[in-house]
Length: 77
Length: 525
Image 1 (spheres, rainbow over the protein chains, first blue to last red):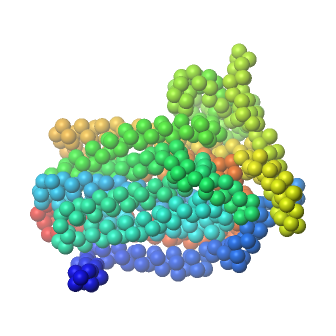
Image 2: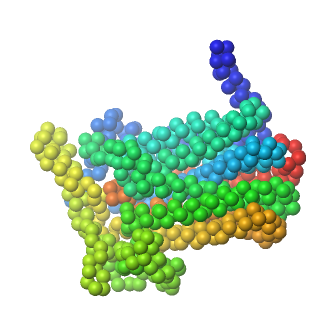
Image 3: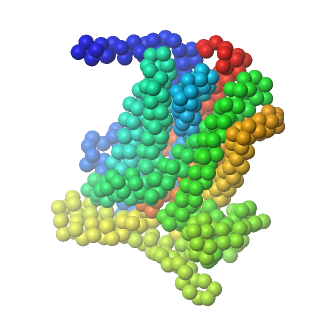
């Protein structure tokens, strides 16, 4: 029982010790963190909205929008 | 119309840029994960400290590449939602399910076991550590599986049914999607090519160590493993490449015709070994397709159909929907592209009528429209084409990318025969030759060019479709301005260039720094 209860603590220590002993890994983590900030904090937030999710409230409206877009030529032909 | 062309072109260019950059990292991750697994297995079995050092060196390079490549694929998913929203909706859960599984597998398997790989050397038993290393390799390959399943579905849509109420394709058979012949072959061809790339990287870096006349034994042992992996990888890649050719002939004959620059097919069709594409040539005209052509007799029939005398249709034959041989016999017959366009337009009109009838609550009209949609849905996407010629992929790019891939692949086969022979037969004099080592180093860019050319062929050859026959790029695109796509395109150019420079710089500096010391007996940090 005590072994199971100590498991989260051991996992945290495993990672903490691992990160502490890293050399080149710190530089890599910096690259990863900067990249994730750029991807999610800038690109996703300001430049890459999910168009259908942001413009329409529900799936039925999204389906209608796509139907309109994909059959527009059929109407105008 | 110009604005639409602009948006489509810029969005395609942006997707291509992102995918190409992403693919710089992925195959190296696939290949190195396997090679590191083999090296650690040798260490586990022999308990020879030298093999532990070798494993740790290449494992660190695996880590650098993994860290720089991680999350670059996420940007592709952003682009789906922003630039290709019609496509994203239309593919429905078929694309979403494999990608979701990939995300879960990648996160849990890779992130858990990579941590054990890097942090666990003194914390877990050797057996557990070895298991973690292999599970990381398996996780990497499983991640690739789901992405490749999604891509294969775009080349050969299977296991789905179109739902006109949801306006999306609904998966009706998970196994048909995952185990489609295209998906299985694509998975093995791609993963095996990753083994080759990883092996070239290890051989190339080891050759650099040999040129520097440092850590000779370390380099030779590394080459021994990589030579075996590379040789097995390239033989199997060529074998699965043959499978790809058969499938392309069966499911994407227009792609095959474009990559051969073939307009009028024959029985016992030759394979072009060398040629210069006439860019003025258009379908159904009388101009010459290729200049300075050197061909292998009956080669394409053998490659595409495994039959020396089989007929292989060209672009004109496919557009017309039939071909007749010199004796007057019909050797090919299918639905003409003009008819496909008519059927596609019928499906689109019926789909529109279905929406109108649904709003009016007219179930009889709904049933009638739905019947027409289903009858013609196979050619739904052709309705967006203005003329049959619009269904022809860019011939020159398909033709040249195929030849770059094949020629580079042939060179790699020869290269690994020599490397494996020299390292396993202990003909180390060759490996000590500075010219051979320079060749080993120069082969690193060759394998990347080969790998990227394969993807260019796969994706450009599929044009104009995002989903073969069902949705062309001009219908898959979102209602956005070309300006916004151009802005993000240039942002990507800056980010990706910086990222690439960072990776190469970190990796090269790490290798240089390590190479200064004795890799077997020097300090480990």
